[in-house]
Image (spheres, rainbow, N blue to C red):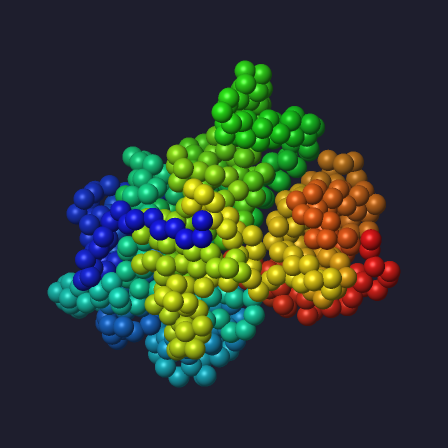
Length: 603
């Protein structure tokens, strides 16, 4: 199979826009909670009804109008994930304007590019530090009229200034946009070059979210459905979730600090979450380390193996046998219940995207009673284009196309996407827009295949394919994803382009290191010391051997090198969505890569 379309379940009127989604939610359930806001410290979550949220949106929209924001103007938002961002998004749409997200980790140069390319006229930042970053380049952004700071009362200031704006003006502006009008410009974090601004329309978000609600009804629309948003709202995945909750009828919460994520999950008690695979990897690894610290490592590993075996057995004709079922019940009492409690106790579903999750983790989580629906999408597809569905799931795939979406595979394996969720083009970049499309289909740059049931499997990035000196084509993601599942491994970059064999650069996870050392009877040591420790090296070597089992000999990692520094957003080697900036790593660590090949070729 090389092409498949999933029929749309919901059609939209051409004159609709995102404001209609909120209006429908308010009309349907005005006095039910739409959002819950965390009290300071360890305080409770305070519910905000749909009617009350809409009132706050209107009040803030009036403030934006009073501040001179015109229909179609760009309003920038630079902040961590917090309630005020969602409020600003909906207020900006209510004012007829276009919110433009900026990652709160952005450099001054990156901020300047977005401000000038998108022609942002008003910018709301979270903190004084963000304001200072903007101040470095503000002289070069002459159309930026004003910068307001959330921590200094930006919302209150705007609301106070809008009291003289007529309600009728907001009613008028809410009706201005139609499905084809731009709702937001999201700048792709990218791994090379300047970010491109993807113009996502009201139709992209509205049609996709309404169809996703229908397709994922069991996940997002059941009574009491609620989710905690902790991914950056500057990223399209989080913005999709923010909009999705409105037509779904779900309750939305925000947490800006992932250091407190487990505590916030426990208190908020989501029924579903949306995240990237790295979060699921860290939850697994930290659970393993805690078990090791408590002298229960063997029990945890037995329970993990049982979970995976049980999940795999559910896909067979005979299902889990009596013996495996009994083991699974014992493991549930000893381990699984504690893991579910760590995720809030009520969470049954998760949608994973942004990178491959891997079959091992997929089966592990399903086996403990926490179903992960892996999906696939990009900024240009308004987040998900495919996703596994309840009752229609294949672990190891990213599912069939969402309702209304189409997928096809080119002869070279590239995935192309079509549907109402595909973006309108790149802002101020017609050449890049033209290059991104082929016969009306969006060229993703990713490689994959469709099985006979229409499920998509991702095999790598087209631009990241390594061609060895022997002419062997190697997709690095297969090896990287497996090796990164080791508790000690933070990041992996597979190399070998035009080289005699495949090698890898590996970094160690500083957060996981102390627990691993304690569990293995070692004294404390730095990451640099650990990179030279025989036991650490032996453990990494075994992980490399396991990763190599997934590929042919010609594709396997023959040599690797552990770097003495991690790859992070702060040092510029990771994008905000935690993708490796491969070209930058290869450039900056050229000496380390050369060292892999200086000695005699590996056999």
